[in-house]
Amino acid sequence: MEYPVKKNQQLLVEIIDLTHEGLGVAKVDGYPLFIENTLPGEQVEILVLKVGKKFGFGKVVKQVTVSEDRVEQVDETFIRTGIAPLIHLTYEKQLAFKQDQVKNVFERIAKLPEVPVLKTLGMENPTHYRNKAQIPVRKINNQLETGFFRKNSHDLVPIENFLIQEDPIDDAIKIVRDIMRRFNVKPYNEQEHVGNLRHIIIRQGHYTKEMMVVLVTRTAKLFPQKNIIAAIKEALPQVVSIVQNVQPEKSNVILGKETKILDGEEAFTDQLLGNEYRISAESFYQVNTKQAEVLYQTAIDFADFSQEDQVIDAYCGIGTIALSLANQVAHVTGIEVVPQAIEDAKVNAELNNITNADFVVGKAEEVMDEWVKENKQCDVLVVDPPRKGLEEMFIEKTVELGPKKMVYISCNPASLARDCAHLVEHGYTVKKVQPVDMFPQTAHVECVALLEK
Image 1 (cartoon, rainbow, N blue to C red):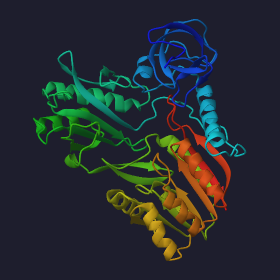
Image 2 (cartoon, rainbow, N blue to C red):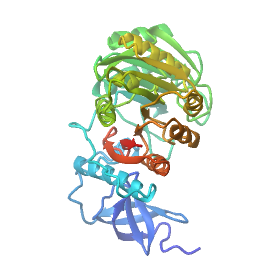
Image 3 (cartoon, rainbow, N blue to C red):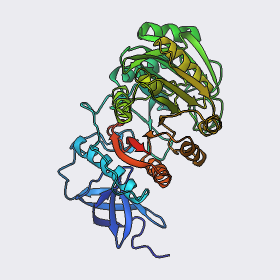
Image 4 (tube, rainbow, N blue to C red):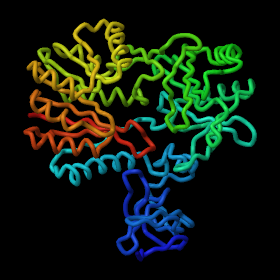
């Protein structure tokens, strides 16, 4: 098959758009080429790296013209590793790009161009916002290194300032790395599946400053354990929990099944919208605390609850959304498939003296099926599903249960648009969609959508 471009060809192209991942798009005779670190309106000389059936990839050899939306003199490591693929685009334009992304999927996927998509809610300071880091460990130049993998590869790029993590987390990674070097802990070798330390995970309460250190190892042995623990505690007095997770599999999955507390508590605490939460090593907790508050507050405002409302929170995790809205409604019930998360949610309800919330373990669609049979009352349904969105059965059961309002929190605009289209077919109207920038400098966008019957 003939393509209008060939591998290793040099071309002068104009960038006309950005993909949903933030790559620049150029077209040669209608054939799309995706090029990193380019912006709409720029002319660039490129080298064609890869040619596929539907599109190809190129890299910039020479920048001919520069967009006025470009941020100059950025560290390209953040683009190459995928840590901050939009760092070269002004923040104002990042927010507009995300709003456009959401508008596009509602037009293209949902066929609902009339849905109002509001301006993206951004951050005052769009760097150093993450409260969690999962940093791979490898051997480079004969010593244990921490950093991040080059995109689409397993080559570790040593990094000390990660730009998007809260500063104390960057500092803690360096401190733990140096302790591991001091005690000659062997870094993991992926090819040969030898060595021991695979990842260093640091989690920190944004408000409490309490810190948890998770050491992910290939084997259950961690030598010299006592000295390592003592050194971490001395260097990082804010650490309230040191945990070891054992991942013996040859796999890209970061955490294994076995977790043990080496020292301190099994959880750290943080606050969100005035409530306190206990967060264990495997608990899901939004990585940007400030924007999680914006996201949840938006959901609460959209729902416009009354004190008589019976609310269901599907995919409730450790209860952050359910407990944030509990004081405004008669009762809220959370559903979550992970038993440990439900245990945490119950503890969090007690911790905050919230008595009108209860939590159920199970698959959301199966629990909803039971509730349909029992004619359970549901005035408002809140959902925050995983990236793939809602199961078809869940949508069916929602329609049967018939909440008058539904607030859909989404981390994937494409599955949100698809699900909204299904719900519209069943008599719901999408009133508005609010994008929220949870992950500045990246192409990801979270949304809150309000649907009414």
